[in-house]
Length: 188
Figure 1: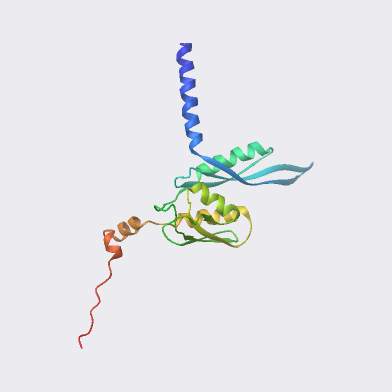
Figure 2: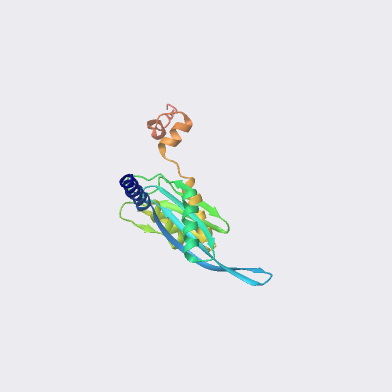
């Protein structure tokens, strides 16, 4: 009986390790915030965390707690609740240019050739790296707020579509997306 319990504990800890090792988490910002209450000011911490598996899934989470570790833990849980699937090309880039906005921030992204690397700044770079994008050009426009820039990046990544998606929406085979319409020329 005790052996079975021991075996189950080992097996569950192994699966938990596999589950957590697939996901990477990076803290973008930790900020001390305060709330005015009757007795004075109540201090707490806000953590902005990006969670991704570097294989096309990424999420941004925010956590607040009275200690930093608790805030980061809540941020990771929030990020895993709000995951986005990112379609990646063979060159580990995005399929087409995209724009996204979040709050006062706007982000512009363009696919890049293999070997370019991630050319982006701040929170945008972190989100793209954890999504598994290896070659991309991105620019933050407007606000410099890390949370709004991370949300704008997620918004842009949500709008991405593959050729197969577009073809299925239109109800035509993928090959017909590339076909040029026949142009009739006047005979002279």
